[in-house]
Length: 278
Length: 212
Image (tube, rainbow over all chains, first blue to last red; front, side):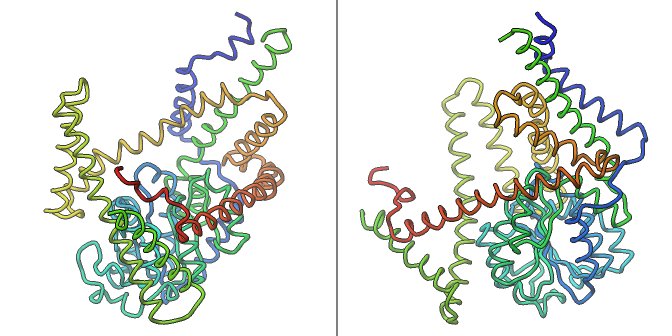
């Protein structure tokens, strides 16, 4: 077997093991996270907009995700929620997936409990959680048409007994919509942005972010964050390093590993081709 | 029977769909009230689909169990036990109960995370074996993928900020945006055409044929 052929047929196990070993090595080595000195313009745009909000503003945060992809959305979602809390903004939590109430209750809100305590946030007055809203796009449409649509929060409290909901009627009363997802952003663009003109920020998967500039340019999306790296950049802006910052080096190593194997595969391909192989 | 199975669904789809479209363009309070109500109905009907899914899941797995299908019957029984246990626990104790959340995360959540992470390994091996510059088109895609992959890595932006700003961002905001626009506009026009066909009763795929 020629050297080129050998180079092109590395057993899978080495390709599985190398990224895992390198990521673990980098993660536990204690090397400080190497993050961009300047955040991406779209992340800066999200940050600057949220920085203009205050205690009179209400934000609707959709947790339209399941455990499968929460790792990608969560860091940016947590950083944005932390920023909103620091600004004293009132937040309504809801979600279009059956997992939404658990995702918000277990993985996002507890991560900003410290900030909530620091800024004196009270449930019912400063934030509320409506959990799962069925119907996907029609569920989102119903919620935007009538913010009292769900009737009760996840603890069973009737909406009329929740003080912060008193003067809220439709999406027109919201200052911002934040969506922690990729697949349902189109529902929110159609039902929230196009119908009521409320700005929308999407915390999407890094891969799905290639689609977002189109919507931003068209005006149906205010801005977005791109998966784990987006979360790390937002944490950087906020001055609160978190999960995404901690994993930034490992993420870089993983991407370099994939690029390395692609280049290796092509060296083998061209080597074989020019040395007279098939 | 034919009327109930065929004509009525088309008639209702056409009328309600037409009213919902009309409400978007015409300001008329009773129409808006009706559309809001119809939207709420849809959300309720959608929620009913979960019950249908539960019944279908139990029926299928009970079939595997009762027929003693080799290697599957005990899995079928296990699925039914777990599903019904979680379902009734949620109904009785509430979905915000600590034990329910523990069951959800430790049985379902971790498996879901594993399922979403495993493709990362396949991605590595698949890109190594399949991502070869065999033609001009493949070479263009390969170069674009490598530029994005390397320039968007946090470490690359830290070390060579110009790589992302000059090449990565250009690829995303110029050729990529043009392509995505093309796909989006094409798909949207297609969706509008399909929508009109459904509303006019020309698209019959969603209704069951007699005897099905």
